[in-house]
Length: 277
Image 1: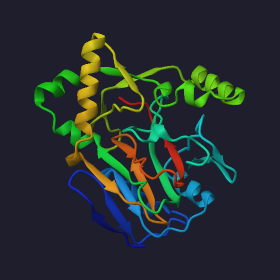
Image 2: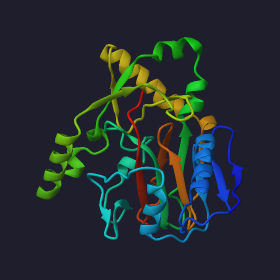
Image 3: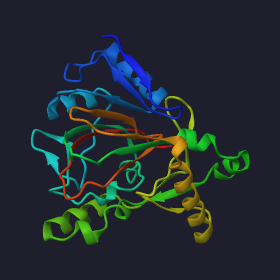
Image 4: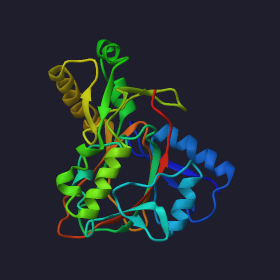
């Protein structure tokens, strides 16, 4: 296969043509896709007819897969998270976030497939932490070096919404036991490209270590607003058969919640990464 890539913006994003994600991924094509992911940070594929098993098999070629502790799993492939607005309240996705940063080795990336879409709305935005970092002043870059921040799963999965039944409460308590708040650097060095990127998000980042609380919160609020600026972001209007593959190590994303009471169903495979440094 010969891949054709069309860039979507100066900061990030490309549409990939010339590939059928339902077919097994050989080593050469895997390398080509990985290089494209490093260069463009989020890749989009149109007109894909893939089953949950085929989606899982594609994603696992890039690393071990994460099983989400809260969201429902697909019966045919437990590594596939089912994001169905008729089943789960997905308010936590309507905020700028990086997936699952509340674990020691946050995901390398994710593969998201559109299964059922509203007639209007339900777009997803992505923003580049690399572009956001590179736009900072030299003095602020220097100030951020060596700082770390606390990430807490309860910020996006509060007990008030995810502990409403006895089973849900037990699942929430077990997730909290396994995943207490954890610290990651504010600026992450990409393990493959070596580029620096902001590594904070409204979804899970709650505090800055080594700064007074007021200073830390002010810094976080600035970084949250800065990295979501339009010049660092793209907006994707989903169509049936669309699949997105993004680098979770250097991007944030936002699922726009503007389509209720219509239903939106997405399937996500999440690829585990390494510890940020």
